[in-house]
Image (tube, rainbow, N blue to C red; front, side, top):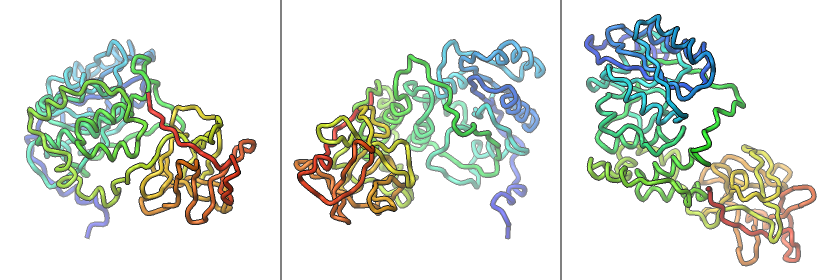
Length: 412
């Protein structure tokens, strides 16, 4: 019996006549060593007869080492490595679509992040299933950073939705589009590629001003509106503030679905992602959502970004959602994203902690009374505006600190 799931990979045999590939690498202000490590590893560990080209897409970098120095360095490979530079910051999603258009030589497009190292024998296991079915695992959705796709098929799918901006949600969009429109998405454990993650606390490259606010959330809304059909109500149950987002025109995408007889999201959930709901049950409907404001005050409950046992506090209301956006659902859970509010270890202060649908079903909101009741204890949600504390105490209709209002907040 094999000791590890990957040990058996060395015993697989692959067709000698594999499809050729263009490897597309998008970068923005990438470090020299990580970018070159990616390029060198691809050249060193990919059979030359299959590697048609490496296409580097410079997404409007301003680092000096990514200009003349890079142009000069890639001459080492006599045209095998090419650089194309965007005239403005497009973001990872659209830069990858640009990469597909610039990469004309390979039959397969392989996308890598700019801080990777491909392992020995990475190519054959990845590309062989595109030529013909192989003994690999089906996958409902992919992470999005590293994948291979037949070039012609990617263009048939229309590449990425041109309305998706910068980063986020594109992995779901392409996954749904592949499955619902006649393709197949595979996870290939025998193709090993190392990936370097950023240091903790790294804030990322800021999006350009023209993009506006909440680009990632808008991306998710676009994907949901195009592909989720009636299931989109479950998304809005978890992210109610996004329902009023201006996500742009999706008429061409809807037409694509119709013209290509793409299957419903119900089909996807029942045939492809059939076990997702057993691990992540569909959320109950919201009763109320928004900021939880002390009645007729300027103070709101704020998670302060804390999770998994941190205490919530009281802070000035800012009407921007985020750490001040909560929802109470039909299961009597008072939630922020996947976290629930409950009483803390001291039995009084309120903490926020991860929960599933069967945990911390403890709250009732009496809108007319402006009261939030903690059902197990029979106490009421209370506050101290001086100490910025949120806690439960014996219900007293005369106490103004036990009066709350929940006001909707919409993302802009």
